[in-house]
Length: 232
Image 1 (tube, one colour):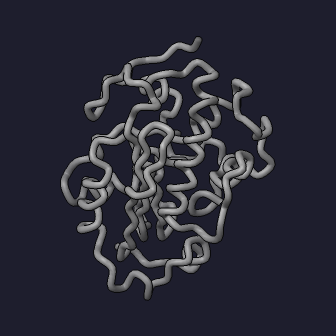
Image 2 (tube, rainbow, N blue to C red):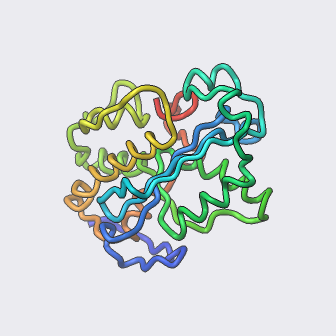
């Protein structure tokens, strides 16, 4: 059994609640680039989960008119062009809808610290505060499982690194086409779904366990393997 610390029931979560009974909002952003001070949000996707059950009828997807210029290098990744977002609302309007969608759910993402950084920058600008939600990183969970030889069908070290699409292929999760924030959120949700039985086998049980195991990597790229603009 591993040593865990109590994260204090942030956002109204009882820390002894089984991790399979918690409400999650799995999120993904598409960006003009990865530099938080120079780049901005182009789209937001999210899907709700209760434990390991993905609620396909409860999703969120919005295009955003970015506050900074779209670059050719980012358009190649996510396929969103300036004309696609020219008439879309600003993040000032979209972020309120996104917060309403997430509610008090635990936020989940792959290298989620990058997404949180952009969201919190906008929230501080618009409302003078940060997200109150707890958050977990599927990369952190994968690395924790890998070190305990509980990473399912994935090898001990991945040839291409720790990016989302490298890992999900090992678990038989299909990857289709270019980046889309909602599809990437759904892909990440499927990965978390695969992790639950492995976590249970390794001794994790309640949400305090998962919040400790899945604590986001600061900067989102501890291994230097993230790659440009996210998950490929």
